[in-house]
Length: 163
Image 1 (cartoon, rainbow, N blue to C red):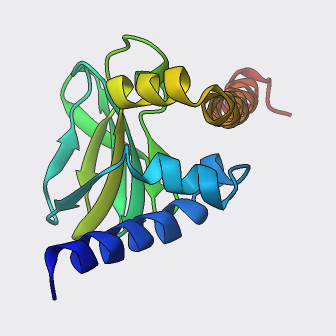
Image 2 (cartoon, rainbow, N blue to C red):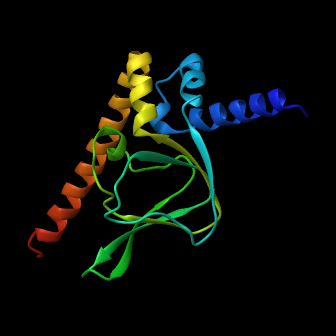
Image 3 (cartoon, one colour):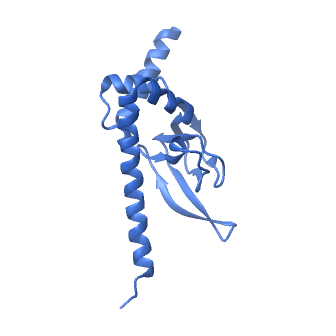
């Protein structure tokens, strides 16, 4: 198979993966095609650390296959699992919006494939294709709002007096 065919197959696979990720649900086929040019594919082995709590963040990751554990330091040393990310899940959405450090450690529970979008590449999308950037930003805002709502509910349940 020649290089052009391989690139076309990879691009088609990336577009197919992107179409199954909720953050990109509002994008049409042409927009997914444009977005695919800005994505990077990574293979992670079981046990690998994707990123650590406190690390600088400059990319968002999308799980194509495999399972990742999201871990939080407890009392500065013991990691507690706070979430599991499966295919279609995303990690580090705040990193493409601003200069935020990672709020948790992400470790591969199984071998996994990730699509990543760096802040620089996202900025290029926003500059060159503002309609795509707006759609992605709206989806990220919705996702972060849902996370905040869930966290608020969990906090409420923790501080509410028990009967």
